[in-house]
Image (tube, rainbow, N blue to C red; front, side):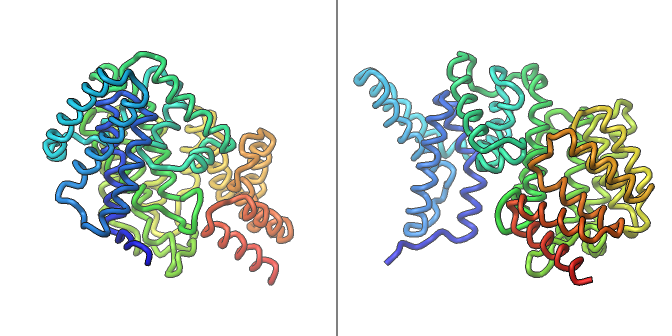
Length: 415
């Protein structure tokens, strides 16, 4: 007879607590890799014991206590026996006594871990990758997809990041205000990528990971409380809120993808749109405009349009043009290609797609072929559109996206 399994509520609780517990353990033991292993063992123990014994009154403290015991075992095996064992045992007693107190602290351990992972010893790309793993809970494959690199490359990058922190001698602890300001750009980039993974999951059967998107929004709200006058923090939060407002209309009853032109706009979250637009309006009035604010402005144009046909595509194309000047990102150009096609016709959009393809950075991305297929369909080139949709379907690892792309190809064949 197999042991009882966790219910959905307990599974979600473990997902929510994992980065908080990891942050608490790392802050004490200053060893990222060992702490991550210890927390994973604690989560496994919870998955085995909680269905049988029930969720403890203080689940966070329970996980910290179990992970700390695993860390004591690690210390015993890796250090001089008698002295270190004694110190570790004393420390464990302190951890156990403090666990219930810490569970009631107002400080957000997940937000603390977010800033801790953006360590000064790391390059920006390594810090982002490490944080997506520790805070976002993304798999190595999902992170590799976000960076457009092979999974093996990303695994090596994350491993090196942990080793770099250990060798640097720089404490792995919550940064002071000045250091926090220096890490803010990396933190915002991490939150942006976590939200994107929640908006469209890189792998799996579901189009969206709403829990991940909601957590990214929650953490961004927390960052804004720390730096309320930063316009790009406000811009990123507005972008997330305005984009997340469409979540209920993006999938059908069976979880199938519903593209923007076909979405029922009555299912969009009107209150969220009002909040996002108000936040964006306030931050745009402060002067200097950054890339997150521009992306939020694009989202606002979509959300405020009464229909797809009534969308101000010329304004969207102009906003993406400004974004291109700020960042050398082929995904920005790909989005501009769609807007240009809606204003000037599909041929103009396809010309931009060809320049992106020649660049090579999106060679393995299904989105390039998906956009090409859409524009070829608009241009009336059915055979070429079918080929592009099939190529995109073969590259995506999200089943909802693949089903949509295959359906589009099949529908064009039948015409």
